[in-house]
Structures are given as structure tokens and as C-alpha cells.
Length: 332
Image (cartoon, rainbow, N blue to C red; front, side):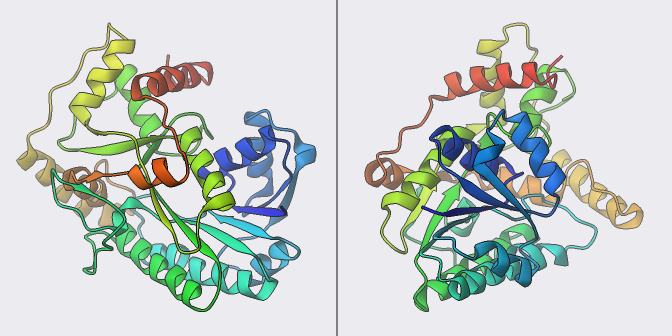
């Protein structure tokens, strides 16, 4: 199947690209920076002959239409996963309007299926309780990122209603092999082992191993019914418990104390005020703390059942990740 990957330099897009290449499948990539895309291809030791790079952006409709010509399947894994920008409107321009552009371009190009990477954040879930794909939260979420992804999800649903074959994936917090420049849980693992985290933050989040996440996307593309949604998650961990798992692999690790909640909120709020003045990201963005304190537990039973999806046990995934980070000199 002729395939286009949007967001090939991000953690999810790069792993989809890698899994397809390992199976000998060709793919087209749309990247804002083709040189960066080539660097990721080289970093992952992939066969460049299997990959065709187009320059473009999901905010550029013309480049989208051009890149989709002749394509049957599109993986829309592009977007902004960060929690802070000096101009917060960029979340809407990229995540929301970008998704509208992708869906419109896919219709124009006659694409057979779009696998859209949404997020677990769009669902309704209560602290300490499990939730599944059954209820999208009708209320606006608490951060610019979350609201932009809620709006992007609605845009994908609208495209679905207009006849486009769309399948939705909803990954948890990613860790594992992938582009070393991609932010996320890998940075926490490396910083913790390198002794750069003086205190752990309160709360936690669910995890999914990067290679497992990519495999689920590919299985969804191959067999999921139109409109299906799949949470992609392994287990939920508080940062303290996650640090404990890492200590099982790195026994000499000293686990920092957990920052009191009141201090974390004060630290985040004061950092946000300073960030507005200096136009530089705070050490603890409010969006990051908000996500950590949600503490709802996603249930990936549907993906396991319908996609025959198997997850890498967390301890095994962490061992592989630490080996990967060490090999790439992120852990000293």
C-alpha cells in the first residue's frame, strides 16, 4: 500500500517509519526540514532507498495535497506535543488547523485511509479510576495543548462524517527508541540516572513503549474498522514508582524525594509568570503539572483484543530504553 507518514521526525512517526522499513515497505515522508528527516533516517539505520522525502508542513495545504498524490494510506502523526510556547495560539494553528488541512487534502487526493494520532487527553477520566474509549470529554480541557487536540479530534470526526475513512489512535506517554531530539519520557529517564532531578514531581502518567505504539498504528491501518478508536497504553505509574522501576535496573540510583503538591503549584505558577516576561519556557509548565495531576488510568483492552496488540513489559522496555539512551550518550 502506498503510504505517507506525516511527522516522521517525531517519536511516533519515526517508529512507524522504522517498523515499515524493517518489513521492507516503502513510504513517503513529509517533513518541514528534509535534512532533519534524513538525519533521523540515518540515526535509525534505515534503508534510504525505501523512503522518499517531500518538503512540507501540515499548515501548508499545498504541500499536503502534493505529497498525498498517489497515496492510499496516510499516518497523521504530526503535531506539537510540547506544553508551552510563548505564543499559545500555535497549538491551534498546528494541531487543530493542521488536522483540518490533512483531512481536506486526503479527500482531495482520494486517500483510502487516514490513521490519526490523537491522544488519551481527549477522553473523560477521573483521578484514580480507569477509563476507556467510550466517552470523549465534552468539556474543554485545562491546557492549550489539550484543547487543540480536542478540536483536532473533532475535525477528524467531521471528516469521518463526510466519508473519509479515519481510524483514531490515542497513545499514552511515550518512551523507548526513537529520535534523540524528541522530547518526552526519555529525558526524564536520562536526567534521573544522570542525577539532574533534585526532586520528583507529584502525580504520574501512563506509559507506552515506542515500538509497541508504532506496531499498533500499523495494525490499526491494516485491520481496524472505520472510525475505531484505540487507547495505546501499558501501565500507569507515579513518578516515584517509575523511579523505583528504574532503580531495579540501575541499583546505584538515588531516588529523590517527591516535591510537595503546594510547592509544585507555586513553583509552576511563578515560572509561568516569569516565562511570559522573558519569552522562555518555564522549568515546570502549568500544562505539564496539569497532566501529571490528572492521574486517571487508561484501559487499552480494546487494542489488545481487536488488534491482537501485545505490549512490552515495563521493566523490559526500560532496560531497552536505558541501553538505547546509553548508546546515544544521553546517559553518562
